[in-house]
Image (cartoon, rainbow, N blue to C red; front, top):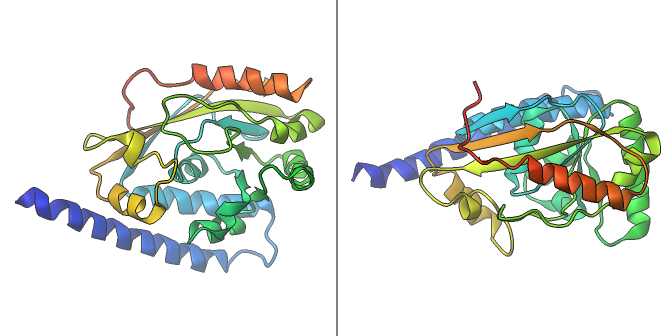
Length: 253
C-alpha cells in the first residue's frame, strides 16, 4: 500500500520542483543583457540544468576531463541528454530545428544560444556551420549528437559528418563522449531513453516517478580535427563506442 502512494507523491513533488526551476530560469534570464553572448547564455543554461537534474532526482557521475572548448560529440539517448551535458559542461548545443518548438525545452534551448539546423537541408546546414565555426573560434564548447536522432542505447547509429566541418575548418579539437543511464525500478532503455514514436509528456511523467536515475558521462581524449569529415566521423564513432560503459554507474560525489 505504501508503495502505491509513493510513486504518485514522488511524481507530484518532482513536477512542482521542476516548475520552481523553470520559474527561476525565467526570472534569472531577465537579468542577462538584452543580447547575451553565447558564453553568458551557456552559463545560464548550465545553472538551470544542474538545478533541473537535482529536481528530478538524477545522480550524475562524470569521468574524464570535461573540455573547455572545441566540439564535443556523443551518442544520443533522450531529451535528458541536454540537461545532463549542460550540467556537466557549460556549452552550446547543435539541435534539430524541431526542438525549437518543444514545450519549455524549446524556449530554454533558444535562450541558451543553441544552433538549430533543419535536417536534410544543405543550405540551412551551411548556415548553421558558419555559426558553429564562429562559436568555436570564441572558445565555447559546442555539443553535437551526430547520430541525428535518439536511440535505446543498444547500438550507436552511423554518424552524420556534415556538422563536423566547422571544427575541421577552424582546426578545433573534437572530444568524444558517451552517456549511459540506469534505473533500479524499470527498464532504462524504454523509461529513460526516448526514441521512436514515444510520446514525450507521458514519458516524462513516468520518468518523474522513478526512484533514482543514475547517469554516467565519459569524456575521452580530444582529437585534432582535420582531413576528410567522413573519415573523421568514422574515427569519432569508434572512439565513442570505446567509451561505452561496461560496469554499473557510480554516483557523482
